[in-house]
Amino acid sequence: MSVRPPRRSRRRGSARYLPPAQPRRAIVQAVAGKSDSVGRCAFRDARGRTSVTLIDLGELTAPTAAVTSPPQRRRPAGNRWLPVALVALAALLTLAGAAAPAARVHATVPAGLGSYLLLAEDQIFAVTALPAVTDGSQELTAYRRPERDTVAPQRLSPLWRLPVPAASEVVSVTPVADDAVLVSLFQRQARAGSEASQTMLVDTRTGQQRWRAPGLATLDASGRALLRTWPVDEPLELRMVEVTSGRELWSRSMPASWIDHHLSDGVIDAVVVSTPASDIEILDAQTGQLRHRLPAPDDLAGYQQTTVIDDLLLVVRNSRTVTAYDLDRFTRRWESVVPLADYVDRCGVLLCARINRGGGQLLDPETGAVRWSSPEDVEVLLAGDNRLLAVDTTRRDSQQVVVVDPATGQRSTDYGTWNLVSHYEYEKLLLAVRQRPEGGLVLARLDPAESRPQVVDVLLGAAGDCQHRSGLVACRRQDGDIGVWQLPD
Image 1: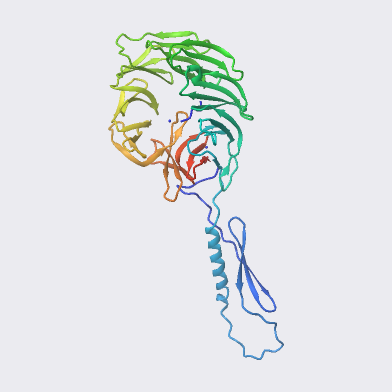
Image 2: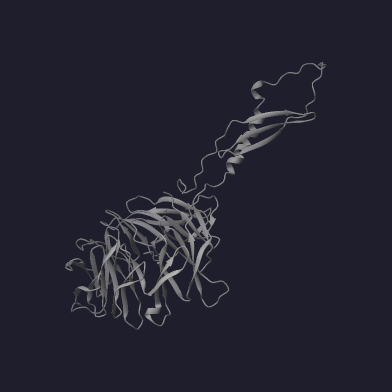
């Protein structure tokens, strides 16, 4: 699912690579006239463009029948073309310095401050406020993904526009097929849960709505979507629908609960419900029927949070323990004590049990053993086989990225200061940017297996607030619009 986040030209190093100009043999022609003559020095640059330099050869007169003046000493033959060569060399250097930037796939989206962008494979979507309107009304504008190499960034033209209610946020745009996207909206000030969240199927060619239903959508590879509402003071509605038609396959109404799901080969095969009574239920995704129920333990004092990662159901209870269950058989695998634990998420090959005040513990997903405890000012981003990628959270304006040895807790490598690029789904590698002194951003790939950041691109004109998906990077530009760059292969 393309939830808004909280891949052509080559580059070398951290700067744009241009092939050096290749000087071609200069062709000099002397053209005589009655009263004057010039030499024309023609040469071509690396792009095949021809430039002509005019050289004053002085005044020439017609030959006379007899020579009355004494013969003059001739200039040595080896030096007579030196002035011409110097002029040609100077012109070549001038052309080489004025070579145009290399062409690449990049574009600008006319979306000013306050707007935001969502990337969805073949299309780009911008949510902007309507001009000259003060009630907060917005619109969703679709643009075609840029494909042409151009020297200057293309300015994208709208394909269609769709109204977005005031105080609503487009939280996801998910491609369904070649001709449709699922658009989910959330309205924070809605009076009813069915009004707070809506999903619609939209034709990508025309912007026409095909169907609309309450709830936010999670799409799977079988052509179904799981919809759930976000109630305020009414029951939660959970339903599975057929995407192409919007036809309801099954539905359940329940008190406000925490909902998660499990994917098998891209298909939702189980729905996890954590009820207000702290029971945990597993629903069959095909029928909506109850498959398993895990009653709340007697010592539960109140707080409980569930997360599904791979084939594990991870339950944080009482902000103190993390318990892992096998989703298939619903049997307990292990339990680990993590004081002040808030939630668990994936961070590479390990699990990160986050603490609400910062830091946390890294757990082995097979055994629950604590591999390393991070201090409050260190947030682990990715865990490799032998090293961890983390950020120092004490800096507010940017993030100091470091590599940590989990065996000792020592910082083995300092990557320097970077700003992370937002992403839509879990990524095994992270992208980050930093400002260039001459303007724009350097884009690098962060990998705990590497000794230093790997520079992959330079985003000319970019200022920050970047995201990436489907081989594209989008950033706010220095001129206020949003730029889109296709990543090198």
